[in-house]
Image 1 (cartoon, helix red, strand yellow):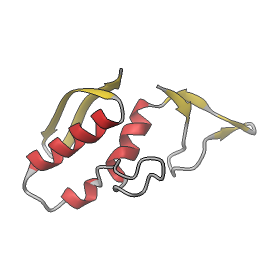
Image 2: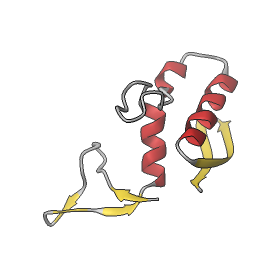
Image 3: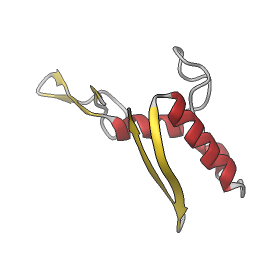
Amino acid sequence: MTDILLDTDGDLLIVEGDLVIGESTSQHQQLLLITHQGEWKQNPKLGVGIEDFLNNEDINAMMNEINYQFTQDGMKVNSTNMLNGKLYIDAKYE
């Protein structure tokens, strides 16, 4: 997906006074993971709120929520895995 890009602080990426547009799938995934439901005005039911799962031992609940939210945003989720404390997601917009 192509969209306006953000910098590492989450601000608009501006180069030489212009907004930068580019491949944004991973940026969308990161935003979906960190935001909570109710934070997206246009779609208040969107957002994983991954920090709520930090001390939860039920990894399946987190994976189910990720799959559901990414699918709701129009992605095809091929796989989600947790390996050695790292989250791996293979999902792309259709």
